[in-house]
Image (cartoon, rainbow, N blue to C red; front, side, top):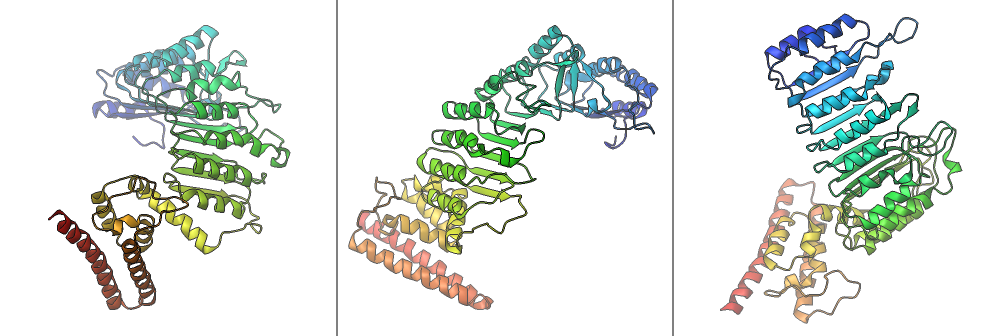
Length: 498
């Protein structure tokens, strides 16, 4: 069955005969009889092995631009329930595009059919209607989806009580109780038409159950207001709860507002930088502040973030990404260069500007930028493990792996001169410190010789790139130097042990 055309009854008949595991049903309001045929076919399935069901709403209009009348979805949903016992992936796409709504009690019945199997649930443009009791029953059933690992509510996921919205607080509370749930994506409205605060969340504390969950590792929030008090709630939980690993926030603005009317943007983000001072679980932090217009500069927030990562030596943050319609000053990169000298965790740092006017952008000089890129590369290759490891054998293997990277080799030997003393063990003091103890004369002598050789080889490599033959000779000499140093270590160790 193709995913670009509506699934007909004949398609389902073929799928049933072939025991296919993926079913995609496209609802067309043009042909109600076709939907009835699909229902009749689904009712014939015996011992189904279907693992994925995707229910798609059509997006076709009449000539006058008006959507056609909605078919009765009750019979279809009841028939789908016949094959739900084996389903692990359930997806609703644009069901509400035609103005259709799904009755809460029928959705509850579907969830009950697959409560011990369903692993992923994705709802795009899905609106559910029912009474308050039916909504409470739906939330209770969601809390029983014990195998659910991923849940996405995207693009106007709304619960309706008549003409009023039912808050999503109970649904989020139910999700927080699931023992295997790892990721949640919420693309909901945090403001109403008048520009006020959350219309789908009753209070800023509605996100607290998700933030406090010991199982949820990834949280993605979309359409989020920078001024929303829930942002402070997020910062507070990051300070006190060390469970969340990945946090992505897509910020937006209230209607008829501009970035210039938000002078407190950086102050709103300060809760995140202050949380990084103590948080030890967060591995990815991505902040997207739009692609249109301009927003106030974020230099102060980013500098404070860099200082927090420098202070918090237990931080696990490996990726920081900020996208905003503004430029970044040189102070931002300088702050992160300073941080990366002692921070072994950060592996990816990206500050993108979506502003067309980049004439005021101040870039670091090539030396500082190269230094920052070196630290990020070393962190990605495992600098943290190396700089906190005490065994010489591990270091010998690591240096052999980095023999092709002269910058990395020089950095590690310069920071750990004890490695160039045969038989010496790692000192108990940290290898990176502002004031180093004076080394023994033989260590200094050996270090100077090795540094000179490495610098000579780097210069020779730069001048002889045009000649492939000379380049091979250079690589052979470099390998010989590393081999000689290793031989010196082994020979000295044997003499001492003998």
